[in-house]
Length: 275
Image (tube, rainbow, N blue to C red):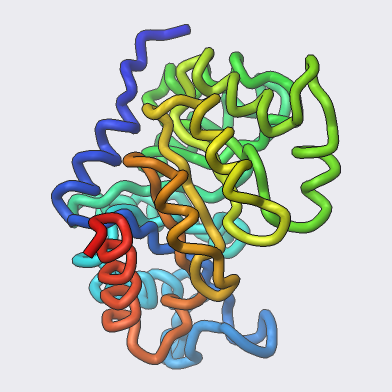
């Protein structure tokens, strides 16, 4: 393994402490004709603006609204992969100029040469980390390749969608539950982060076991606190000091982005500081 020295962890901790926040604001912008509800307003696409220009205009307003109340921004690439390299770079420059970290939600997972290409371009785009699926089986190779270009890798460990239970809990790998095996590999191989759900079949015991196996120097990214109404106290208690709570739709499509982001940040801080 390369000497990566927990670069992503340090970036996260710096942003967390400076912003006094463990909120990760997800950016999943659906365009107006994409679905019936939870879409970006048509006003961003007027005056002959392209989809790309409209998304960037919306992102600027989104970032301005949430930047004081979060420590990370997580664009979902399934919503923005139509953008060009310069737009990704512009987005990440804006994120970093506000002292935030950027995570691309890509759930990358393929053979080594394909992953290497992904890491190269995601690094060129300016992201600090990317989400990653371990099911191709090349965890060590992928971590090493990501670290070679200075990127953090946040590995899917226990997702909360119902069918994930078959692969991540019921499946047995070397005598361990699937999620236990993945979490243990994070500690063994100098992993950067893990994605762990907060709803459905994910229990407090699961969270506690994952943190124990992964160690304390891995960022635990937990989605599902907003619209999915995940258990906040459970997530913070067992997520540990290096926990990052993602809220996407509940902020992104709210009537007042700034007030909603502030509400979630205040709520998270009340619980984690025991106020």
